[in-house]
Length: 446
Image (cartoon, rainbow, N blue to C red; front, side):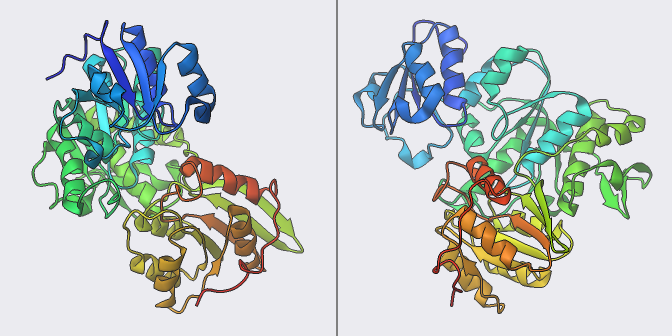
C-alpha cells in the first residue's frame, strides 16, 4: 500500500488534467508537499486555458499522450483522474492513486459521504446546509482545493461518484455516515457492466459507522453499516419514524418530490450528527438550490403569454429527467438528448406522454429517444444546436408555459460538460445567442 503522506522528492505524474480543477488542485497539493509534478494529457496545455497556463508557469512538465507515453512508466506514482476507466490501465503500471485518495490520506475531520446515480449533489448540499459544514467533491469544489483552504480538521460533506469510489477501493477511507440516494442504469461507458457499477456504489456503505439509504434501495443494500432512523415525507410534513412532525415541506424551497426525498436522507444524517429537531425548520429554510438543477433562469412575456425557462442540465439519466418533468406544473416543453451512456429511453418516453410534455430532441441520442417517443405517439422536433432547441421548444408553447432543459443524457457530444450545456441554455433562453431555426430543425422525426 502506498504511503501518500510522504511525497517529497517523488516523481508524480497526473494522468488526466481535466477541466473542473481536480488535476490542478492535485498538482498544487503535491508540489506543496515536495513532489516533482508532471502532467499527461491527450491535449496540450493551451487547450486548458488559465489552468494549463498555471501548470506551465509552475514548471510542471506537460506531456501529450496516453499510458503508452514514456513518462507513464518513468513515474514513481500516477495520480489518475477518476474519468479514466479501469480498462484504460495497462496490466503493468507504476503505483497509482487518485486526487481523492490523496485527500483522505490527509483529512482528519468528521465527514459524511454521499453517492447515488442521481440526487447526490443536492443531498450533499442539503446535508451541509443543515450541519453548517463544508462541501466538496465530484460536481462541487475539488476535495484537495477545499483541504488547502479549510485545513485537515474541518468537517466535510463530500459527494463521491462511482468513478471516485473505484479509485478508493484499495484503501477505503472511513466515514461517520454514508448516504446512498438512488440507483439506476448509468455510466456503462465507464463501468464494464451494470453489476460492476452497482458493486462500486454499494461498497461505500461498508466504509461508514452508519448509513442512510433511499427506501427503494433497502433490499439492494442489505450488506451495509448500521442504518439510521428513517425520515419520511407525508402530506406536506417531514416526519420522524414515530410519526411526529420535524418540519414542513414548505420549509424547503427546492421544487419536486425527489428533493423532498433527498431532504429526508439529509435530515436523518443531520440529526445523527447532533442537529436539534427544533432547529430543522429554520435550517431547511436556509437551503438554496444548486446551479443547473431545476434552476429558474429566465422569464419573458408577450401578447398575454409567459414563458419560463428552467435549467436542469445536471439531469443526465432518464430517471432524473422524469423527476424534473414531474416537478413542474402547467404546459411544458422539454429538451432531451446528448451523448450516449448506454441508457434506455422507453420509460422516459412513457413519462413524457403521461406528463403531456412536448419534446425537442438533439445530440447523439436524438434518434433513439425519438424512436422511443414514437411508441407513445409523440413526434419530437429535432434541433441542431441549443439555440435552435430553445426556439423550437418555445414555439411548441404558443400560449406560454415552461421550457425545460432536462436532457436525460450526458453532454460530451456537443458540450464540455453539463455546466457548459447549462450555460448555453441560459444564454439561449435570454436571447444572448439568437438563432433562427433551420429548415431541418423545424421538421419532425418519423
